[in-house]
Image (cartoon, rainbow, N blue to C red; front, side, top):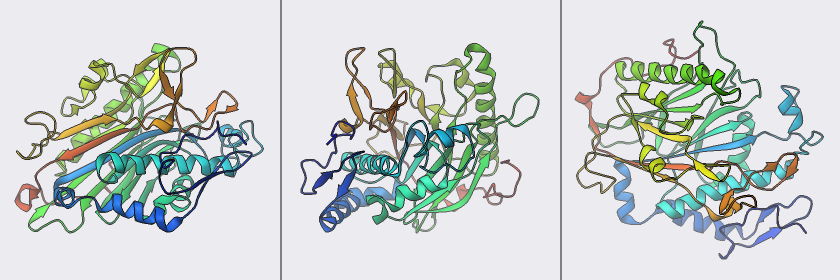
Length: 389
């Protein structure tokens, strides 16, 4: 029995029984009714938290590192590699093990923060099937989630995606927005995903709506010669933010894997957004570990939103709190350097039983609702207006 290939479950000390199976290990959930009661308790929260949710938005982002499905559909070399007969021997059991670990992380986050995230943004997922299985085959099936995903022109076949709680938010528009090079051609990289959300049953006459932009910018492969690709992605993000504000969407969250550290001069181009990761980076915190050092490349950018006086979040004038999540079952000892590192699914071709080389990040926003007369009428949706592809 191989227990080393499964992240330590955070339910290990609870009344939910975990059963490990052989070749490869897989988490089997028992006593489903008890698990459902525990989940219901997490989602309901304390009465004080329920009263606070009307002006709160929780967003989680996580690069899930090569989260392919287990089928070889002939779409790319990576698709063939991550299949049962491929180099990685990526079987359905291993795929579902990763799904369960992702779901456990979201439940762990709910236990830490008092509620499940409203929005879960992800990077490096192969297709919509992956997200559907994540929601259908894990404990997440007990909650109502919506999916936003589009196939991108990335040559590896990986995309960004977004899940949102449909009992809390309605979608106004979802759209994939290409990144263009200096010559106007579409770059073969991940699209920027735009999702416009409006809170369900917001108390009249208030309007509570947000635009979420999910990013996974081009990597640094190729060194300095690849910098123009990330510059193009940042310029595209700035263009989208400018267009959103012109259309009356003043509340914007941009998140993702930007493949550059939080203090990179490149981000000065996003001068209309607040870089929430800078204080964390200044304290040496990070989401990936490279040569024994933490680097922070998974970021949140936020448009200027005044905080209500009673929010208790961050510093005066700020409405946001960004944190890097540290679920203990997602790490392992760094055998080359001191300390710990994220536990990856694979180390080279060897199956390692983890989830990702990135830590997830979390954002809690506390803000006053907008009155109807504060919202610009018209142009409320980008769908069909030419801002995307």
